[in-house]
Length: 575
Image (cartoon, rainbow, N blue to C red; front, side, top):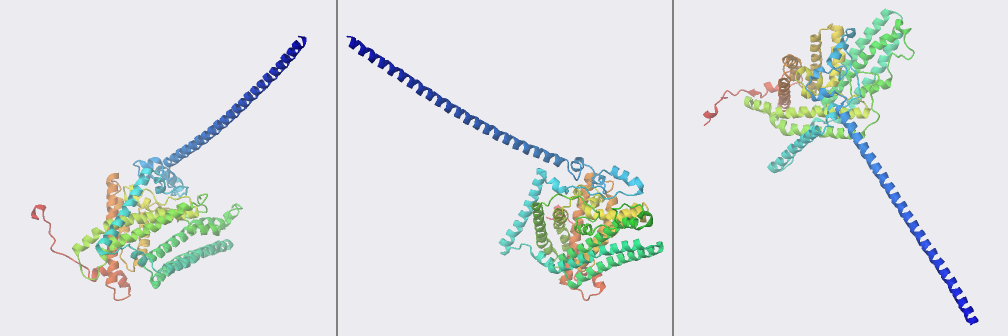
């Protein structure tokens, strides 16, 4: 019994030990399992936290990006409505363009008048960094859409004529003939332009020579003789330069478009030389006199550097300054877009001439033209003439000038104002071509008012119109090889007359009359020049005397015959 009890006790003891070990193992496994679960939960929480952080970070970036875009759009809208060229009221309200002073390109006329009274002198031209007007207006999506509609209309007109030619005649006429015929011998024209450029570069050392010799002259009489000789030398150089270019154009027999390009460059060089000399003469006189030599600063110079002269020769302005506002970089995309626009406009003007103007006048000179056909040709050229006028404006004064400005980083791009809103001819003249107008104002009108006519602005205005008309007529007369003073009459007589007729008209009536006169004037000018050009081709002149250039062939050789059978009938009489 005792053994049995002892064995029983030992068995129960061993069984109790085994159960305690099993319980401890279960507790350990449970703890490990709970620990693993906690670790997994912690890892899941960490992953969730990382995902939340990444999501919040991404949302922050998206919000920041959207805020940046909104800020950029807001700044763009602010810039859009704070245009550099004009104030908001001058663009979108009915304010007169004449209130914009020529001197500062954006100030009111009252401030311009106040400035003009100081010292008895007219205000000077000021250069400010600003865009062209159409560049800013095209940022408005509504005006940009109108531009797109205009382009689409031109494309539809082009496709319409191409399809008509193909269906009706079995061939396609793309209108390349005026380009090929007009710009022939263009490589010779470029060579002549290079000679003109070299001749213009000689002005700088000549001016330096005048300054240095004048500085060394001890007597006032010697200075006066040297100054008068230099003035005669400058006049002789300008006359010789013009005569040489004209003679070269005639001798090389350049086609009309190439001749126009060369003669326009000749005029530009003449205006540049005059601007450079006229702008630097006062400074040179001040620096070379004995009285001012003692007081002049150490950094003062009598002649600007050659690099400034070179930049002025290529800059899209005709008014000289030592420094101009410049942009920080060249935007090649802008240059490329404007160059494409220039090429496209040239092609389209050629297409207009080929399709709408040449068929009207190519038979002039072969046989007599009735007065009725002449009147039909005259009015048939009004719409093509107006379209060519608008395309030429956009090509030269917007696309070409902005492309050259971008290449030269020239920041002041006020090449024109809102001339299409002008209600008087005076506003139109001031707004149409600001580049040429600034030169006429600075070196002709301003000098005439201050030094020649002594505040007689009417005579100064007549002088400005005369100079402008002469330059235009020289270009046309020698480009087309005949003297037909239609442009001169339009500028000298009709222009001055319209300045007084449209002065006191209301804005709406004046704007309508201005556009009517522009359309009719361009139509008359194109028709008369085309008529004389084709008459000389179809009925050549007999000799090469001066009379052959002065007398219109279209009047004498198979000219216009009057039709005496014209009658006017009422509609009810036609039946």
